[in-house]
Every structure is written in structure tokens, then in C-alpha cells.
Length: 392
Image 1 (cartoon, one colour):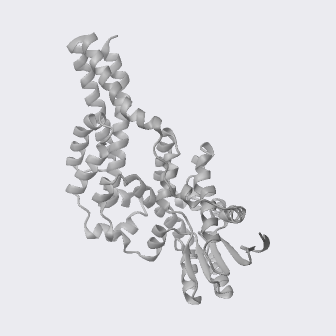
Image 2 (cartoon, helix red, strand yellow; image 1 turned 30 degrees about the vertical axis):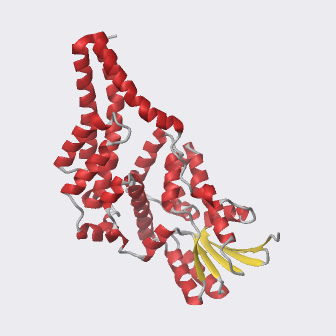
Image 3 (cartoon, rainbow, N blue to C red; image 1 turned 45 degrees about the vertical axis):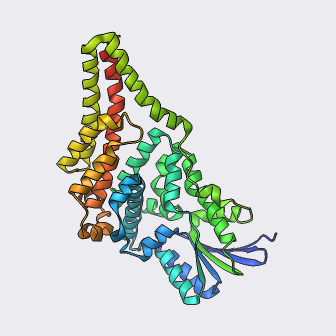
């Protein structure tokens, strides 16, 4: 198999079985990169143009009205609240970086798509779906790192104005996901494998199988070395597209924890009597209710939503199939059903912390996540208090 390479600034030319593959390495926050992507496509007039976009991100940059089609109740019921909230936070991060530098988010991809249409080239969306990447990251991360991941996303919503020129230059060299999660990546190397290495393999496969004698691929500069590495290898995309099932240990733990709690209640009643049993019950109710309630308050939930979280948490914590956040989210959606204005303003509201908490769509997602987090904390706070109340 032929493997020839010719490289100029930002452009790498490769030969693959008699076909020409041109990799255009871009910076996601650079006007120069956008101009380069457009110029290369217009000059080369390729048969195919591959871009570092998935269907969801392509729709996001091409259809500014996509938010109006969102069914937030369906999102909550399908247990996708965190994924959607995380995706919005990532979008917010990229938009604010772009605004700081005077570049539209995905400008280089937009220019590449327009140029491809102008020269009559077919378009290939080469990146893996963002929801799959986030899901694989979430499943491959330990519980404590999941908490750090969530708060890293929240912290990304502030502090953009304090980023210095050196930090901006580093961001230009990295994938936007890698920039955002760089601190977590240091302590959890598998995150890099999922965010970068797996996507390098996936995009290499898509580019390799895009068809056409001449292919221009517009990708982040940080992905170029990996794509070059994997372009000449046979890649199984199915293994990269599937979301790993929850670990057996986690499934067992989800059922074992409620069983343990019930066992503690039973042992407490028999060994400590009614008084001990009453104390244990009070601690269980208080810890779960208070922390779930505080989580909902932190999300600025409706008063009725706070009450629902307080009432649901002690019960849902004993049922692995339910969660206090799901109940609270549906109640919040009922009392503060998103209006057309919320959907219209969503693309601008996600640019600020205040907007996230003000918009009814994002507030529902925050209610789900914070109520669930509070209920989880409440469960682990209650356990030692209940054991102590047993008086054994």
C-alpha cells in the first residue's frame, strides 16, 4: 500500500492506493484556519470534502433554529439530561472563546462546507457523534471523576475573559473538548484515549472510506498526527460507536446499596428497638430530603419542584429504577413549561451562567442533575448516621 507524504504549512498530502488525501489541520478559533480551509478546497476541487463534524454538530452550525424543536420532557424521560446539559456547556465554551477572538464557532467548518458546495464536492461528516463521545467518557470515568467532570463543565462557563494570550495559543493547538477537560485528563488518562485517540481512529476510517480520487479533510490540527497514523490501518467503526454497558459491579452496587439500607433498618429495629428504628428512619428521611432539596434550590427550581425532590428522594434512593432528579425535572417542566421565547433565546442564554439558570430549558436540566447529585450525597451522609443510631 502506498504511503507518500508531502507537507506544507497546515496542509498534509498523502497517497492511499492511488488516491490523494489532503489533510488541512485547522485551529478551531482562528480566522487564518478558516481562510486556509476555504482556499485549499477551492484550489484542489476535490471529489469529497470530509469535515470534523458529526450530524448533531453539523445541524447546530447549519440550523440556528434547532433548539425550537427540542422536547425537554422527552429528554428527561429518556434520561439524557446530563448529556444534553454537557453538550450545551461545551457549545457555550466554544462560542465564548470564538466571541473573544472574533471568530464564529466552527467558522473553518462552515467555510469548508460552503466551499465544497461551490466546487460540487460531496460532503462527508467524519467525526463521531458528540453524544457517543460524551457517553463513552462518562461510562469510562470513575464516580469521583464524574463529579469533577461535571463541575469542570460548570467552571468552563466562567473565566473566559481572564484567559491570557498564551492560553489562547495553546487552545488553538488542541481539540476543543481536550482544552476544556485538560485538568481532568491529567488525572484520568483514559479520557484522552476517548476524546482524542478514538476519534482519530474514527475519522481516519471515515476519510479512508469516503470515496473519490481526491479527498480534502478539514480537521483540528491536533488530530492530524493520529489520522495519519491510523489512515493506513483497518479500523472497526462499530467498536468506537457503541456505548459500553454499565459495568456489572455498578449494576450489582445499585441493587446492593438499597438492600444494605433495608438490612440496616431491619437489624436496627430488632437490636435497638423501636426507638433506634425511629432514629434511623428520621436520619434517612432528613439526609435524603435535605440534600435533594438543597440541590433543587441550587438550580433555582420552582417551590413545587423543591417539595417534589424532598418527598421523592427518600423513596427513589431505595429504588434503582428511579431517581429524585427525574421526578423533580418533570415537575419543573410542568410548572415552568418552556415557552417559545425560551427556545428562541437558548442559543444566547447558554453564553452566561445567569442565562443557564434563567432559561426554563436549561434550568430543567440543572434541576435534574443537581437534585440527583443531592440525593446521592444524602444517601451517603445518612448511612453512617443510621449505623450510629443502631447503638450496636
